[in-house]
Amino acid sequence: MRIVAYSALLTAGVGCMLVGLRWLFFLGLGLVFFSRCFSSYVVSRSKPVVGLVVCLAYGAWVFVEGYRDGTILTRQPVGIVFSVLFIAAWLLVMALEWLRSRRTRRTPNHA
Image (tube, rainbow, N blue to C red):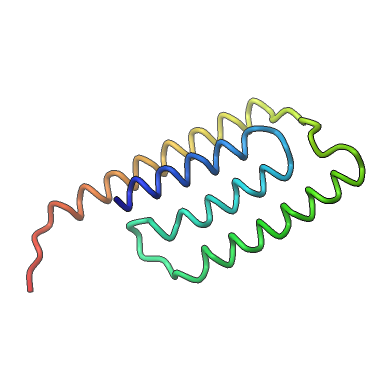
């Protein structure tokens, strides 16, 4: 169940980052930080939540500034190199997480 939540949050985050709207980029970054709460790697539970809050606060600020400037829904295309690098990193992280979850399921629990 954890790998499904991790994969869904990570995929939604990367998808938001690649749309091309600045405030969605920071929402996606926050989702990527929050997805670390469901990772099989040992991570502090407070760091992803702090990253989520910071990204959402900055995204809200960018949203308000864009609204005041009239550029809130103006799409700025993401470069092809940026997109390819993000997708490659996303695939690598997903593969590593899947391999890690498979490895932890195979090890017997010794008490």
